[in-house]
Amino acid sequence: VCCVEKHGCDSIAQFAGVQSRRQPSGSAPRIYLPFILLLLMFTPSVDSSWWYIGALGARVICDNIPGLVNKQRQLCQRHPDLMQSIGEGAKEWIRECQHQFRHHRWNCSTLERDHTVFGRVMLRSSREAAFVYAISSAGVVYAITRACSQGELKICRCDTNRRGRTSDEEGDFDWGGCSDNINYGIKFAKAFVDARERMVKDARALMNLHNNRCGRMAVKRFMKTECKCHGVSGSCALRTCWLAMSDFRRTGDYLRKKYNTAVEVTMNQDGSGFMVADRDYKRTTKNDLVYTENSPDYCLMDRLAGSLGTAGRVCNKSSRGMDGCEVMCCGRGYDTTRVNRVSKCECKFKWCCAVECRDCEETVDVHTCKPHKKPDWLDLT
Ligand SMILES: *[C@@H]1O[C@H](CO)[C@@H](O)[C@H](O)[C@H]1NC(C)=O
Ligand SMILES: *[C@@H]1O[C@H](CO)[C@@H](O)[C@H](O)[C@H]1NC(C)=O
Image (cartoon, rainbow, N blue to C red; front, side, top):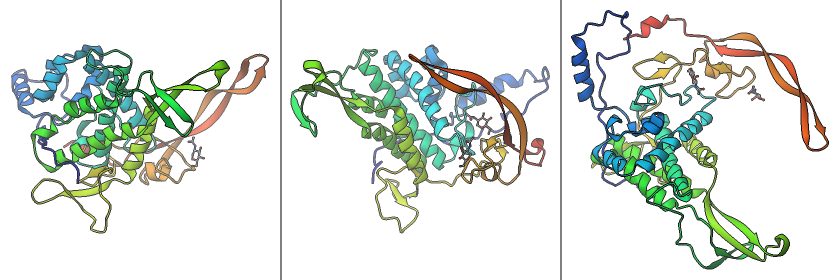
């Protein structure tokens, strides 16, 4: 239904031979180096590397971000201040993703100094990829819209299109103040984030475009009116209101629910859109996240699939959910360690206005998943 835009996507290139097998130091033959560099240069980068802008911080140099397509590079060069916002935003949506998945086997962890950011997990067109594309694109909308309002950007300001008098359930009010310019945020996010996918037409590109759009719309969904009262001693005889974005957590929670109900689809014959895999599914997928491949179970460390496994993950012995030891450890069992923790206790309210606590030491059991019995080196392929 949606996503009939033109689009494009990365081909899934295999980093054959450049796996992370460690060489004993000093023994790497020098003559391989130019070869490896060449290979890296001609290996299409495997992921939406604009994500990497977050890791670069203030050092965003458009030519040095691997995997930006031309359109993105141009936008990057033209709007360095926006890139700054996108970078700060990236830290925020990655944190939100990790919050939403903290009790899951796949926990949205990132790889340090790796320009794919999430590693090979994102090569699979799974639910998890659907979520990451959606929240990353939502994150760009959020970051840019906020920066516009704060006057940090040359190209945009508050939305001044709202003028005049109108009313809500509490009565009349005047538009005023600084309304968040969500439409600008959405416009830029669409141009920048979707640029790569608009170049190729395949199932993955369609999927990404769809989920990117869902992410952008998720932010807009939680716009709210904020008002200020003017009047004698706080009476609300006169009100000025503006539109503001809600906390990004709302978007995160919403997309997390959408992750739970994500819909499996297949590309239709002419490649113009999706068909829902389950024929009994009657609703439109317009506001759903979509994916085309099942997820791995993320139980074991699997370098090729980019799965870190759950060995060493903390689990909750009394929970029956995803964070329960049974599920988290995939039935391998868990180890228990006693640790001492210092926490605040015996807090008393002191007039006025402070709370005084004592530091108490408590002993708690921490459960962590056992590793798989097969030794790790067998996984090295
Ligand atoms: C996610 O899980 C991995 C192991 O599977 C662990 O090393 C990492 O600390 C976890 N990250 C977060 C943010 O919880
Ligand atoms: C463990 O799970 C139980 C049941 O779901 C919950 O009540 C408890 O707060 C959880 N403990 C921790 C440390 O998260």
